[in-house]
Length: 171
Image 1 (cartoon, rainbow, N blue to C red):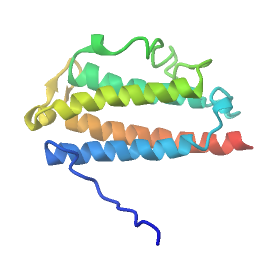
Image 2 (image 1 turned 45 degrees about the vertical axis):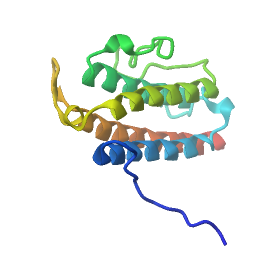
Image 3 (image 1 turned 90 degrees about the horizontal axis):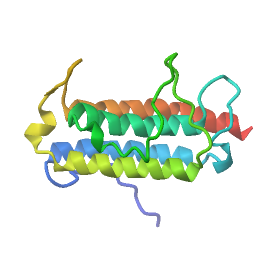
Image 4 (image 1 turned 90 degrees about the vertical axis):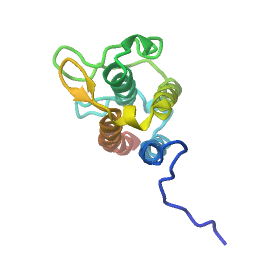
């Protein structure tokens, strides 16, 4: 008999609502990792031929956006972003993603994992009041609950690109 898969978002400890959102956040990453498991490590910098970003560039961007929203926009603690993990800016002058080349798939995956650990540690430590409280920033007011929603949406959008790259680079 095969084990039955259980498709639920658990409370994740602490506040049940925060836990469920963070469980969804982790589920999205799990699905992204399944796509990445199907991409050859030597394809990380391979140009897709459509003028779009490489796998490595997309992975760098996903990790940087995640850490930036939490540490810059929610906490207003940009200095806590580990610059050894993020030596490049996010975008070049024309608005396109900064090409990130010459790093191994392993390095990109380690960055994703390290970033996720940092972000989850912060979000799990928040009280429900702080998690839902808008933080007054220069351009907008933003709460951690919206940031988690946005990061889920952001990663799903980029997973679509990664899926396309997987298929194109297989050929």
